[in-house]
Image (cartoon, rainbow, N blue to C red; front, side, top):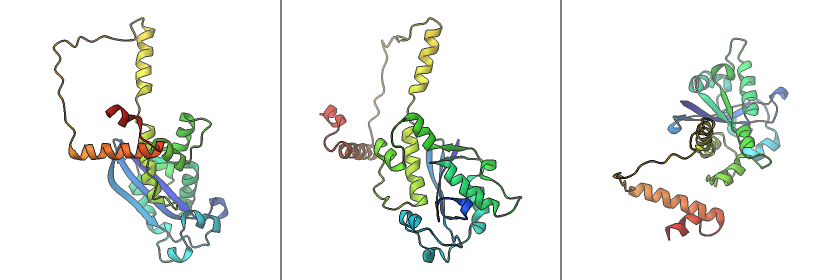
Amino acid sequence: MRQVILDTETTGLDPEQGHRIIEVGCVEMVNRRLTGRTFHQYLNPERDIDPGAQEVHGLSAAFLADKPRFADIAEELVEFVKGAELVIHNAPFDVGFLDSELARLGEDAARLRDCCPVLDTLVLAREMHPGQRNSLDALCRRYHVDNSQRELHGALLDARILGDVYLAMTGGQAALSLGNEQRSSSRGEDAVRRIDRSGLVLAVVEPTTAELAAHEASLDRLDAAVDGECLWRKLDA
C-alpha cells in the first residue's frame, strides 16, 4: 500500500479570495514504512502574503520571488502523488487549495481527488479522541512525537511529523482482536482458547545495539512527557 503524507503553506486562508500555495511538501510511505522519497517545493504565488499567514510559516514574498510558479511544478507533483492514498491533516484546506491551483491550469487539468483517495487525519483524530484538542501539536504531545523543531510551520517538516503521528495513531490492533472475540462468542464458542504449550521451545532474539539505543531514546521521551521516571523504567528496575 502506497501512501503520501502531504502538507501545504499558503498566502492566506481561502483560495476563493485568490490566495495561493507557496510551499508543498510530500513524504512517501509504502506498507507503513517511510521510504525516504519526498517532494518539496517553494512557490512564487505572484501576489502578496497576508501578515497573519506569514507569522505562521515565516515565508516572505522576497524569499519566494525567484521560486517557480505552481504551473511549473504541477506535472511533477501530480506524478508523485498519483495512485497513492493521500494522508492530510484537515484535508479540505489543502485539497481545496491544490484543486484551485490545478483549475488555474485549464479545464483539462487533473483534480486531486481524481488522482488518489484522501484520508483526513483530523477526522480520524476526532473519532478517536472526541472532545479533545486534535491539532497536529496536540497529537504530537498525546503520542509522544518529537516536534521540537516546529517553531514555524513548514510543509515538508509538518508532513514528516504527521507521518510519525499517523503511524502512532493507527498502530494498534485492538479492533481486530475485539472483532474476533465477538464472532467467537456469537457462535457459542469460548472467548478464550487455551493452547497446549508443553514441549514448546521459544527462540530468544537479543536486541541489537541500535535497537537498544532506540529503546532508550523512547524511554527518555516518556520521561520528559511525565516530567520524571516513566513506568517502564520502574518495571525494568
